[in-house]
Image (cartoon, rainbow, N blue to C red; front, side, top):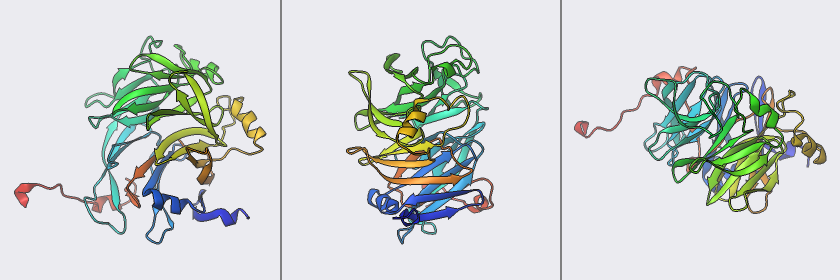
Amino acid sequence: MTEMDTMEKQVEQTSFELTTSRQLQSWLRAEQASLVFTTYQVGKVFMLGTNTDGTIHVTERTFPRCMGLGTSRDRNTFWMSSLFQLWRFDNSLVSGLYKDYDSVYLPQAAYTTGDLDIHDIIVNEEGRPVFVNTLFSCLSTISESHSFRPLWKPPFISRLLPEDRCHLNGLAERDGKPRYVTMVGPSDVSDGWRTHRSGGGLVMDIETNSVVCEGLSMPHSPRWYKGRLYVLEAGTGYFGEIDLETKAFRRIAFCPGFLRGLDFVGNYAVAGISGVRKNKTFSGLPLDDNLRQANTEPRCGLQIINLDTGAAEHWVRLEGIVDELYDVKVLAGIRRPLLIGTKKDEIRTMISIEENPLFQ
């Protein structure tokens, strides 16, 4: 089978190309889901769903340095971080279809935070975003009058200063509350995490301020799913699970790239992989040896992993100038989403009316 035989869909742009595995559209239809993912490298957010004829449909919009994504439980709202703002997108389609789209996400609000290097986001049980404020080494939420309101910091962080001391990056919710975080290293000095890249990574329980796993290489994207805590060990390329009793990391699957971004649907994990930057931050990691042993080059895209077998049954790849992703979310129950951006005129005509019984 040639490479072109495996490509079901190709979306060509002026500077990058998106391809998918041949059966991805069948999998999306079976799971009744679509995907949204970000690349800060070129400031793009993608929505990937299926058309009525079963082919892949892709929407992409431009936002500067878009990174973290957080979705509400009903998937009608999601939040996204950009260079100096935190955006809220709401599904304005109450019922029916709009040009065969079963959801239309509009940017309804943007909070100006400044450049906090916001990473992961969750939406808590009150519907408010809680985000990883990487620059200030803490968890935060939005403020109506300031850049942010701090909520929690690691116990070894002595002060809130814009120094990215431990590279706090990942956040998992449990029962509607922020619960687990990942960081590259337990440092309390400016940029000190860089000396801990290979084996200083931690997963912490913010409820107890305790370490639930240590000795990891650049862990990212902790997620609680069906009673289990999953983590991406970006510095090795392994997707795995944390045993909360033994505090050990159990490897499930090797993914050929630097791992960031994780979500689930049914019996599958959707993990983001990126190419490896040729600089001190990304070089010299165990991932380099693991890629050589697998006789492969790092890729950029999504790996869709069967949780029972660890097999990457489906995939999405980006080639060209895009070789780094940050986050991915599954939009369960949504087949063909449309994302409205701020750069084109379409936003001027997307007008909806909230129901009011006085006018019925």
